[in-house]
Image 1 (cartoon, rainbow, N blue to C red):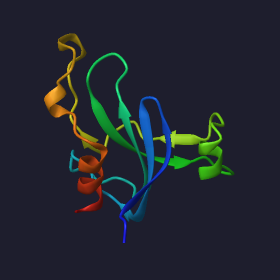
Image 2: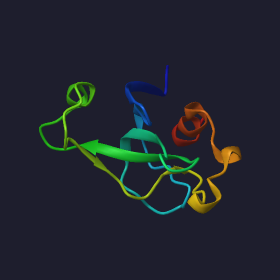
Image 3: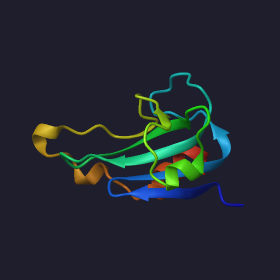
Image 4: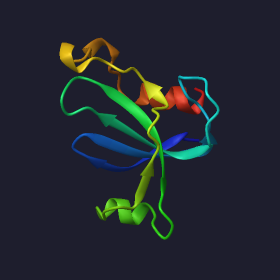
Length: 108
């Protein structure tokens, strides 16, 4: 059984649905369980982070796919990845394929 599924993609981000709820975070802080993850690439420097998100009431996956606005609540604290320094241009060695982040989040 697949542990995650790509549901939408834009130029700098990919949106995934997890098959089970996750509470994984690199900061080891207790967080609200989540089923959706966005893996986002920084625009100004080299950095890739994963954030949990949920849909606003009355919105869902089809609204995301049709690019409706103001339908997501993205958590501000990233759940996976490495912060890099914009002044240094980021760090290409800290950027991995989406599967790397998703495998950590889903416990693979």
